[in-house]
Length: 360
Ligand SMILES: Cc1cc2nc3c(=O)[nH]c(=O)nc-3n(C[C@H](O)[C@H](O)[C@H](O)COP(=O)(O)OP(=O)(O)OC[C@H]3O[C@@H](n4cnc5c(N)ncnc54)[C@H](O)[C@@H]3O)c2cc1C
Image (cartoon, rainbow, N blue to C red; front, side, top):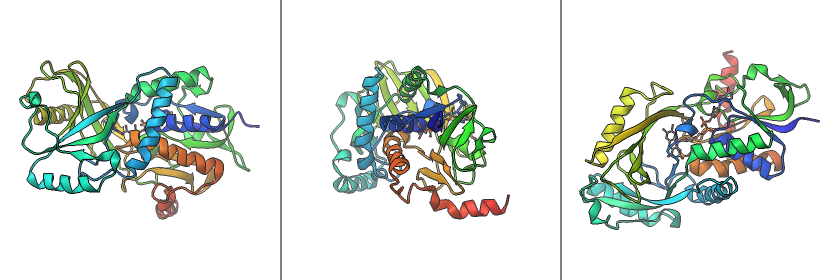
């Protein structure tokens, strides 16, 4: 008899949605997390956007994943008595006529969750936003207060006696000969690691091709601006109520600072200058590290040499829209033996694993 069937390590967005999905199935779960500076979910903007910023194409499986995600967030926010996710239109400023043509072409091919139109922004914003003649509206975008969502879940887990505020080290795990494990004095059948970008530092799954991207954001107020939509132009400006805005986000692959940097602040101010000529009063800046992957797909599945050790990671830049559907897939796999999609299954990197074992 184990203390709980599952031990999940890491209570970012990934660990939270996974624990909720396991509990929903009546499974016994413990979750361990000790705050690590730079965790993505504490820094995230929490936007869901049907389109990828670079190509203006629909994000991978967005229209399949997002309805499930919204249902889950709405239910949990109501249950835990916190602000629900909010749908928001997104104004995409386009650089030139060529991108407008591209925009119009792709608008025709997308499904209802990301219909686009070229409706004019209210003329009152014309002096407040830097806008040329080319732009489009993205429907089906929105915002979740992720840090609040995770904190409410943490309190819930504490109340249910399943949360451990403890640092996890894989060296502290004793694996039983015939399956299962012991950690921190308790026994489990499965260990699922959801440690975000930190995972790359550990031998268990460090052989996977993580390509983490640091990012910075700031909260501030713009006295003369009150817009009810997200603006996207080289970065985003997200209305947070009244005259307060979230501005982001930077991308940095070389220097993975878990705290804000001068370089990041300068980039943020350049994003702000590209969006609005108005003054912004900075209230707070912060940074985090995205668990992005070389092939831009999630990292999910069992360790090649240990069927009781799993990873749930690689949510990259789209954790909000992807996490609930992916958690459901992993739970179906664990409880009902369904196969994981090849695009998310870490078995696609078996060659890397084999090479890593030869070199150690
Ligand atoms: C600046 C920025 C902006 C972003 N904006 C968006 C956005 O607008 N929309 C969107 O969808 N996504 C966005 N993302 C991406 C999104 O935040 C991530 O996809 C998601 O948060 C990843 O969650 P995670 O749980 O995998 O990782 P993390 O959030 O990093 O969680 C890992 C957890 O593991 C814990 N942990 C790590 N090591 C240990 C250990 N040894 N022992 C115990 N606990 C440990 C940490 O404390 C942490 O709580 C953004 C990310 C950043 C950085």
